[in-house]
Structure formats: structure tokens, C-alpha cells
Amino acid sequence: MELTAVETAAAVRAGSLTAREATDRALQRIARSQAVTNAWQVVRTEAALAEADAIDQHPERSTLPLAGVPVAIKDTVPVAGEPLRDGSLATDPTPRDADHEVVRRLRAAGAVVVGLTRVPELCVWGVTDSRFGITRNPWDPDRTPGGSSGGSAAAVAAGDVPIAHGNDGMGSIRIPAACCGLVGMKPGSGVVPSDDRTSHWNGMSEHGPLATTVADAALMLAVLAGRPELAEVGAPGALRVALSTRAPAPMTPVAAPWREAAERVADLLRDAGHRVTDQTPRYSATLLTTTGMALWTTGTAEEADLLADPGSLEKRNRRHAAIGRALARRGHPKPKRREAWRARAEAFFDDVDVLLTPALAQPPVKAQAWSSRGWLRSVAANARFAPFAAPWNIVGWPAMTVPAGLDPEGRPVAVQLVGRPGTEARLLAVAAQIEAGQLEAGQPWPRTAPLA
Image 1 (tube, one colour):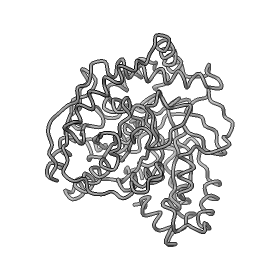
Image 2 (cartoon, helix red, strand yellow):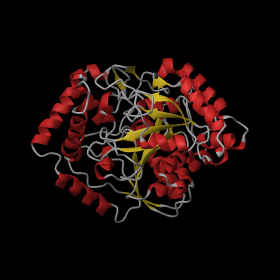
Image 3 (cartoon, helix red, strand yellow):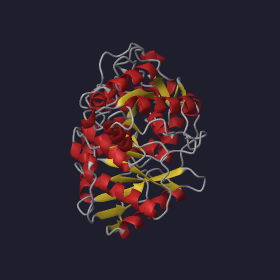
Image 4 (cartoon, helix red, strand yellow):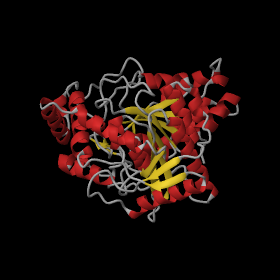
């Protein structure tokens, strides 16, 4: 088993492992897995080794929290010297001059950027395919690793790197984390810098970590947020936990393995001393179909209008953006609808500290060229298998995915934890308790897929 990010950084700081050795191992793993997963848009072999050498010679290497840790960056933020393609031939292929702030923070902490990972075009969808190819789940290559951070999730689950950057506008960290058996967190609004002109989606999108352990996710989030205290995961204390296995979207069935995963975790938390009750937020019937759709499509339209060659967009995304423009002309998104949902969420959390739900409603869908199957087919597939994430982007609250074992087919299942703004540390503490409880009970917590 490869080292975690915490273990790698500690070894590099201590001098028992060099950053070059850690980076070279990652590059070797990528060379083995890429033909199966197609997780990587760019592999920065020579540049990454040069960065690793610089870490080994860094005069303050012993103080770097991510010293020598190989990391993947989702191809949706600028990385100096590399093109930002955002999964699209409509983007400018010119290499970028400077790093995005999240990349700068990772580098400053000692991380080595080994490459950029695949995304669906403009990060619109919960599956990862584009004209750059189909990205596959290392647990089951016939299935998607989710999206839009599907390349990052596949890279971590395959064991290429211990941690990866993602961003989440309607579940784009939590969905792939669930598909690939990873810990993934979307922090609340403003916790991590998110000043992008693109991929911000009306303020719904946040940058966050994908990792194989809670400690690694916490460490990466601490670096991204510039808040070192987040790396120290404490005990959560006794909390009021609401279990809800009903999907936010009407007439959306939840498959038994995903419902049962949430129920198992509820039992674990109840045994740990939390008060667990069955409660479901008052989701409106139009939360995802009207409020969410307006935010999603108008955000995409704004991004599409900044492209170098918008005519080169996939047909489904041209339609998606056109719907967004039409809605914008009619005054959407409507702030009152968003605020109405916020008021309902706040009322629900008056008596609740943490909401526990399944992370997905159905197993990951097939890995295929969804981009050629049309807009409506893509929307229907996304809505059916991944409805639980988007409500919390709409209000900008922190939420995360935590692994919860394997289904009868040997694929990961997972749960989602949600909290009020400012409770990232609490969610990490509960996640760590879930992780420890499963390990103590002998339940599977496989860090990487059998492919690795």
C-alpha cells in the first residue's frame, strides 16, 4: 500500500524519503493506470521531477505541511506553463502564465504538481467524458468515476496520487468521491479562495480535496483554506444527527445498497453516543428542477460566453448554455427561490447538528460517450443517480462524502454529511469517527481500487 499524504510529507520532512522518490513512484503508477482510467489530461513528468528536486533542496523543507506530496490538479484552474482546457476544444490552448491561488498554496506547502486531470466539458456533468476521451472508474472500468472531478477521483482511487484537487458546483467533488470510494469535501462559501471568472456557477462552486483518508483530506483542506488548525481533526462530541434516505428530487428511488450504507453509518454514530433521528429537510418539489436548473444553466452560459471558440462546444453543452441564456433573459435565477430554500434549511438545522444521507441514489452510471447522447439523456442520467449533493451548493453550506463499505458487486458505497456554515471541522471530526468505527468493526475501508 502506498503512503498517505500525511505519511509522505512526514517522511520527506524527516529525510527518510525524498520528494523525487515520491514523485517518481507516482509517475510510475500513472504510467500503469492511465491506459485503464484515462484520468490524466496532462502528465508533467520533467516539470514535476524538477519541482521535487527543488523541494528536496528547500531550506525549510522540515516545515512544509505537504513536503514532497504528489498532487493532481483538476483541469479547471490555471497551472503555470500548462493549457487550461476545461474538457473542451472550445478553450484557448495557450499555456497559462500563472497559477491559480489554490495551486499556489499547494506548491507553497511543498506539494508537487504531477499533472492535470480530465473533466467533462466545462465541468457541466456528473460523468467524465469529453472529446478528450472517456474516463473510467478504477473499481469497475465499465462505470464512470463520476464528475466533474472524475479524473481527480480516478487518479486517487487508482493509487496514482494520495490527494487531488477538485471543485464542486453541484456535487462535483462529492459525486466522484462516492463513485470511487474516497473522502471528498466541498467546504462552505468563502473558506477556500474561489475567484474564478469561470466555473463559479452563481457562487455555488468551491474548491476542495479528494483523498483516501480523512486525515489527508483535512490536511489538504487546511492548506487550501490557509487554516492550519483544520489539519488537527478532533473529537466531535455528542451531536444531534438527522438520518434522511429520501432523495431531494421527487420520484427518485434510492437503491438498497446506498440506503443501507446510510443506515449502517447511523447505527455506528448512535453507538458512538450521538442522538440519531430520522428527519428529512423540507425540499421543495422545484428545488432541483427549477431553482437548481436555473443556477446551473445560467452559470454555464456565463462561462460559455467567455470561450475562445464557443462554436466548438459539444452539442449538448451548446443547448445547456442556450437554455441558460433564455432563462437569464427572463430574470433567472430568482434570488427569492434560493433564499426560500436557505430559510427551510436553517429551520431544519435548528434542531440538527449534522445531516446524514446516502451520497448517491444509484450506482455509478456506465462509462460511455454521454456527450454524443444528447442533452436530455445526460440530464436524466445525472438526476437519477446523484440527486443528494446539489441542494447544499445552492445555499453554500459545507458537505462531504465519506466511504461506507462495498456493495454486493464489490463497488464502493458512501454517505454524505452536511452541516451549517463554519462547521467544516465538525464534519471532518464526524467523518474520522466513521472511518475509525468502520475499521474497528472490521468493515472494509479500502484506500484504493484493486487496480492499484
